[in-house]
Amino acid sequence: MAKLKILDCTLRDGGYYNDWNFDKNFVKKMISALNESGIDIVEVGYKSKVKDKFYGLCRYCSDSQLEFLQSYKKIEYSFMVDVKEFLNERQALDIPEIKRVIKPKKQNVFTWCRIATYYETVSQAAEFVSILKEMGYKVSFNIMGFSLLSQKQISSVMQKVKESLIDVIYISDSFGSLVPEDISKMVNALRQYYDRSIGIHTHDNQGLAFANTIAAIKTGVDYIDASVSGMGRGAGNLRLEQLLLFLYFRYNRQDLNPYALLDIIQEYLISMHSNSQWGWDFSYMLSGLKNIHPTYCQKLKSSHQYTITQVANILTAISNKHTVKYNPRELIEASNKVLNPVCDDGKDRIMLKPYKVKQVDSIIILAGGSQLKQHNDALRTLAKKKKSLILECNNTGVCVDLQRTIVVLNRVRLAELYDAGTFRSADEIVTGMRVVTPGLFVENLRYIGCSLGSGEFKVSKRLIVIPSYIVGMFAIGIALLCNPKFIYLAGFEGFASGEREGEHKEMQDFWDMLQRSPYLEGKKMISVLPTRYNLPIQSIYSLID
Image (tube, rainbow, N blue to C red; front, side, top):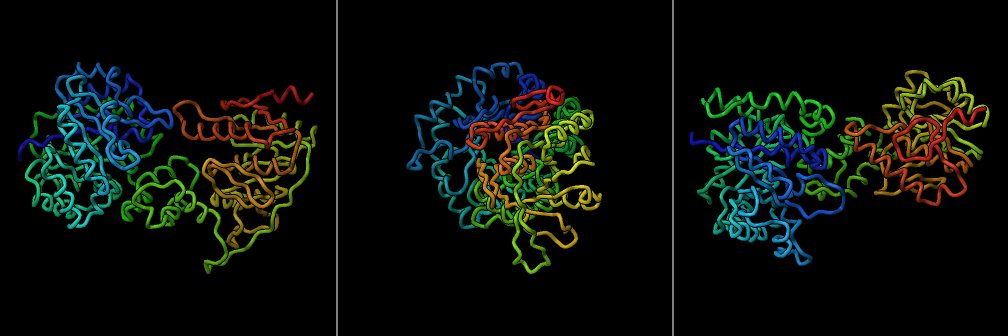
């Protein structure tokens, strides 16, 4: 076996989980460990022009911030470009923009550029190759969604790029849908048109990233992508430490050091995985088998708002014409189909009665924060003094002997309430689901229509539209329908930096949108317990005496 080249893509592919906002000290330690491991190339991230939100260093690979990479001499460095980012309105390459974002090789630490392209932009990508070669870079050509290409399309791709000076052409298993025999067929199909280096980039949706890589090695590929602990978009990639161990012992690659990565895994990657949860599961395998773009699954899972069954059903509900490329509106439509079923599916369902809105002066909304029980007596006192309507998100375990309305969105939470007998101690239970199975039906269960909307919050007696499937947002909508003068928030603590940070931002964006809206005119909304959200706050103890 000729020497197999290994490229690590942890910082680039793993960046999908933290917006490429890796701590610089972590990047240095990662590069140092990779340098000692014996691999050949590190893909540091993207060269990108996106400006729609904050992204970290590894989304832009800012040359001035990466000069420290020169200290690590054993490895080469690569960045990736996404062709579609550099197309103008006529779908032609925006060459001035390319030259603004990407400087010639001699002006930075990079020796490689990897071009990511789908079949539709292959012609522009081939032109991109020529520009990059003139700048002095080695270039790899990563064909995304390779599993979707027919033999005729593969032939068409190769006709368009065969005259270019590509150094490596990559089979990118973008959806994690390939199996080992597919890999062998595809490598052999490329060999009919192309006699230079071939690479493989696998995803682990089916738990086959390692098996597919072994098949690629046996078929004679020249380059293999991997990432530390498999960190990568969706189900993640081939684990680099697994590849190094295999090559070291099975192929006697004494130039590799599999143990060089263990400290960085122990110190950083274990906790990163705990927070981000990449890797095989049912929903990722489903997305792989159905060739569904991994962003759909990642968006559903990273929010921690859905059960695994709901994630699977939403993925199944995505229309075939939108599976290959991520479409946020399609995700909302599919989510609403699953979260708000109607009674025409032939299954036994009970239609719920609508919730009758109560006009009150004050409302206390209880969320699931850890400090509720500590201040239970004060909350009870406040409720009695103000004669407040209590809206409880799911079951907080406080104020249980007071009349309260439980608000619940998730079917699993509904079942938990039913099994625990919590329904019996509540005045009413309100859900956004119009129908339930007989096993979850009780007489005091009511509904207000609820659906998802992209960046929207709308409140009417028939429908509450919320930007995310979060019960606290739904409860706020119900509270506003009651037209109170005061809304007291308790238990909306938020999350510390690094701990479900995405969810914290999602909820903060909601609070910001709410406070700019006309819905709060003439109303006062305050948090009466500590919160990390940017909300008006007043101690509960200043309100009860």
